[in-house]
Image (cartoon, rainbow, N blue to C red):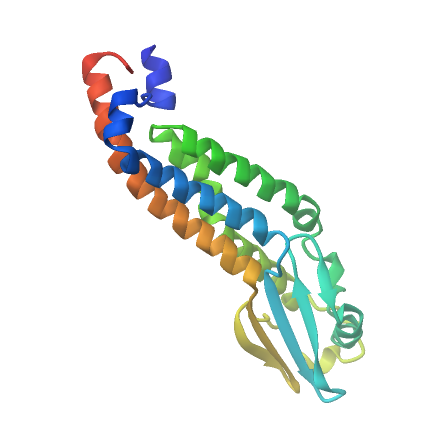
Length: 222
């Protein structure tokens, strides 16, 4: 095995070594496999919920965000936002929603590939999946900030409402309007994927680092 291939892909596990320490080498593979399944399943579940309380709607208005679409009382909330000069919700994160499913599928394949790499480069492959839940919230907060801080001065109620930043999680609001936002099961699944991936790499390091060090010292990947 060439040194370049060894440094990129890591050493292969000798058959005898695998038989003697089967659990050691199976553990990171199983954890990373479970992680990528959770990430894939997250596509079909809501990532974010928001409830809006307004005097005109005593039962509240609701928005549910998936990675690629919005559901719920979008038109009604847009109608209220129009009076304070906020742009329609559907204009937010258009690129993200258009590409999200493909990006998640790409991360799924990267984590799968990471399970086959026995070197430090496996971490690089899985890093997007680890950062994805935080990235989703950061991107969502960016759009909430952008929409809340750039109100149309020509709106009917623009004089009575100052720019504001809706909260991505927890309670927020302005004037008589209150919002309650929380993470959906999809985001929790993506978070569980990130945690399992990190734990998987703890076992990955324990399994393959000694093997890698022996292979480098011996000048061979066998």
